[in-house]
Length: 364
Image (cartoon, rainbow, N blue to C red; front, top):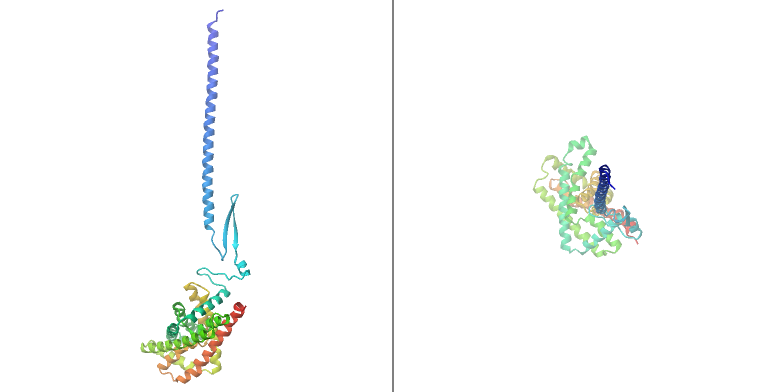
C-alpha cells in the first residue's frame, strides 16, 4: 500500500506538536519546583529570623527586670507571654517580722532606724575611753566652727534683723550649725546630745548596760566642752569675728544666753535636742551623703531659728563672747545656761526620741 507524501507531512506535524506540548509541560514543572524551593527557603529564613529576634526580645526583657522595693522578681515564659511573679514582698516580710533592708541611697523604715541606733550604741560602748574622748573633742570643735559661722553671717547682719526679723532668724539657722553637725556626722564625732539618744536606745533594748552609757555620756561631754572652748580660743586668736558687727554679735549672744531663767533654759534645751536627735535619726535612715545633709538641715535650721538652746554649741558661743568682753562670769555661764540646758537636752533626747521610738519599735 503506497502512502502519499501529504500524509507523511501531517504525521510529522502531529509529532512536532506533541513534542512541543511535552516540553512545555516539563518546563512548567521545573519552574514550579524552583518556585516552591525558593518559597520554602524564604519561609525557613523568615522563621529563623523571627526566632532569633524573639530570643533577643526575651533576653532583653529578662535583663530589664530588676529587684524593686526589696522584692525578688522571676520571669516566666509561656507561649510567647512574659509573666512576672513577686517571690518575696516587703509586706510579706513585715508579716514575718523581718525588717526590710534598704539599698544604697534609700531610706530605712523607722523600725530599722531604731535597730541601727541600738547597733551604734553597741559600737560606742565598745570604744576605748581614749577614742570616745578624742572624738568628743573633735565634735566640740566642729560644732564650734558652725557656731562661729552663724555668728559671723546671720548674727552680723543687724540691718536685716531690724528690717526682717523672720528672715534674719532663718539665716542664722540655715548658715552655721547645720554645717557643724554635718561635719560631726561625716567624721564620726562623738556628740553628747546625740549620744544621749543613741546610748539610751541601746540601754532600753539591752544592747548596752548602764556603765557603758554613763561612760559614753561623761567622756563625750567632757570632750565636747574641751573642743568647744579650744575652738573659741582659736577663733578669738584668729580674730575671725573682728569685724564690728561680728564682735557685737558674739558679745550679745553670750550675754543673752547667760541671762536665761533656769526653767526657760530647760524648756529650750528640751525642744532643741528633740530636733537635734531627729536630725541624727535621719542620718541613720540613709546611706548617702546628700541624704544625711538634707536630714540634718531642716531640724537644725528649725531649732536655731526658733531660739532653742544646745549645750555643746553654747560651750563655744558663751566663752567666745566672754573673750571679746561680754560681762559674763564662769558661774553665770554654768548656772544660767550650761547646766539647765544640758538637763533639757537629756530630757528631750531620752523622752521624745529614744523613749518614744522604743515604745513604738523596740518594746517586746
